[in-house]
Image (cartoon, rainbow, N blue to C red; front, side, top):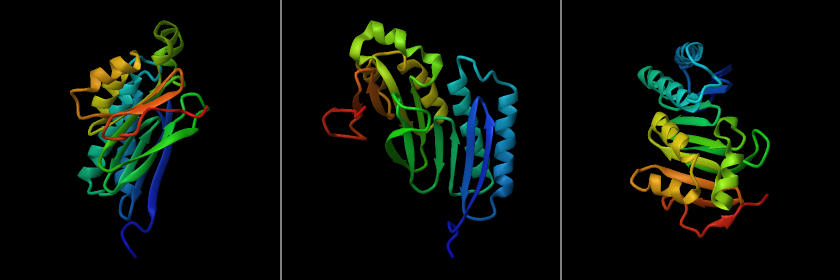
Length: 204
């Protein structure tokens, strides 16, 4: 039997969303409890409806990662809404369809020891509809960023989600962050590190 033969999981509600902490292997129940306690502490001090909620979720996910690593959990996945942080081996993360209902994925990415942060129309704080009227078909309906740190990704996402796709790509040009863009006209594109294929039309 390998150390990945079973999982330990905690699912709870905090920061205005469902949080899932999953450890792969044994001896991690206490570490998950400590990570949950830290997330709940952040939750109690935060405003779930606040403008910086995405960054707060990124911070909470990174705090959970810090605790799990400190307590020698080598394989884990932390999911707080549309923010995910992976520890260890590659795992597949579903990306929310910005034109679908909550939990409906349009694509998947595999990440190892990285973070994923997504934002889109289904998150009310971005007021995407009014911006789409000003920017036309290139206004972003959905944005996913992949990189090393969920706090940094959340801050970039907060900024880039207010831009059209060309401006968002320019913003990310000098970073090591990979991205997937979905426009209001349902065009999907990605940075070179993720996808070298031509832009394709997203199936509605």
